[in-house]
Length: 298
Image (cartoon, one colour):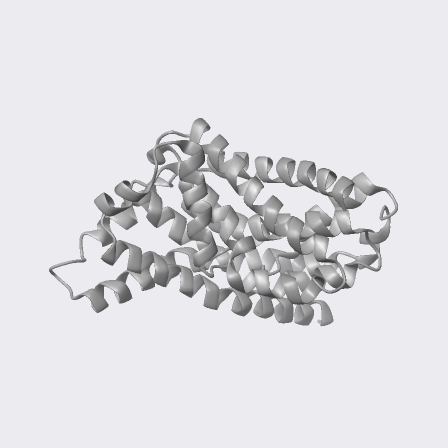
């Protein structure tokens, strides 16, 4: 009975911590659909993949979206014919470099470990850029990555905007549609994450904390399984500094906002499996590599 109670408490915490940001993402997505035309976006996005991904990162800086919230926004951008590399770079960069997360990272680390703050910012941008370009090369057609059902839903709902409804009605309509489309996957991901957090002994984290490579892998897996919001993971990372080195903490702070259990399910609900698994693999590989590089610099 105590086990069920703890799972319920953690599930509620994860779900309601993520829900406001998911709502924000759905609202931003609805605003893009209502106010921004395909032609306008096509004009401001460079054809060059590297420059396009830089624009996606730049957009991510100005949108205070959490890791779950960026998924409906990225899908809406793809529906607007934004290149895949731009949408992916935006989706990976925003949860790390948006002002809210930068501020929380600054307060957690800057006075005692400023290198962690700067490395999270710099390497977060680098990872988003590289993976965005790679995904843009591997997947050249958005029809091959968006789930056909999700795509049909967007198309069907998209026909109800504009002249039939006013701007406000259109925003409310698209916000509710996007929110309800992804919230079920958030619930499933949050439920699994809560089970993992309850049954996983914290002592497992410190088994290999004296081995740099293994400690990086352990904290990457911990970040993936524990599914914390990127606005609060800095303070958890700071609490782990007494047991792990700065290199491992950097891996934890980079991977968690880009991918975890809960947003894996949200991604799978909106994108094709091949796209999601390749994206996750690239994130793990890139985070491991840059964390090792960061360890040399730290």
